Image 1 (cartoon, rainbow, N blue to C red):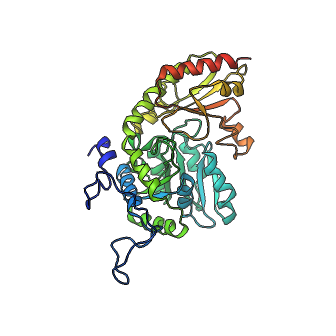
Image 2: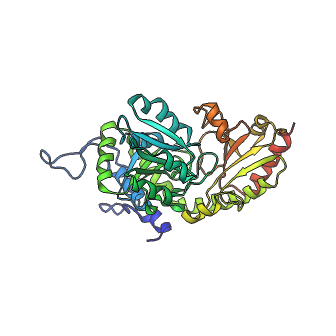
Length: 381
């Protein structure tokens, strides 16, 4: 099946017992055993739940991987993946990584002897220079959050395979509708499913897909042992959200391209970061590995524009954490999503106070334009 059909019919399609077209919510903690060791495939809902299993099967099929795993948040998913590393291991990370991922590495895993190396992953030579015997994984976001840098997944995969290193890709911004890292050779894909996959700002969830059964067994052991699983009701909601991913992402894409071009021409805007713009330095790299450009735009306001007034003036676009919902959301990365990253690192890579991240929703794009213009007009000093 093609992607738009898989979104609706992938994984486990309906309920064979009753004929229900939707997977039921199996709101249970435990399951009857016919005799000792004899089950119908489920014994305890931390280990496995039919609704969660349907979701995990769906995301595995959409990403082209072997097994999928659902967690209580994107950070729970990333934590489980990082738990594959051991004391003394190192992991290479991008220089404008999502703040939550950096925080868990810097404040949690570092305490257990897992270290990280910050690299501009858009430059394969810099990644090569960072690889040593202790490096066991390369973690990439492409596009990065929030500066929309693009890493060539194929190059990283090739380097990683030659050095026996795992390639882990955060595919939250693109989703499997637009980009499939496992088909490009990646070992593990992670999602904050709270974002586009859920799509309605009504749940918190994380998903992981692995390329082979060996990794699947390791990650299932970690998932079952640490217990950060997604509940059945949120699993049901996430399956429902994924069914409309295609139509939503098409609108997110269309609106974002229009707004990126619009922002590029505004005199209040210093620079625009969006891979769909022809002048984006990684435009062609992104086109070579993805089917669209996504719904996230970052831009910097000029000095004469007060970003605090700009945020306060917006009416249609909401100031808030997160992204990927049907509504447009705007945030201030330096103090919100990336506040946990030291200021010297933020400033070095360009996450400055005048940087704005806009998650473009599916509203009428003319209303979004008008809201931005009103914000600019009120914010000019």
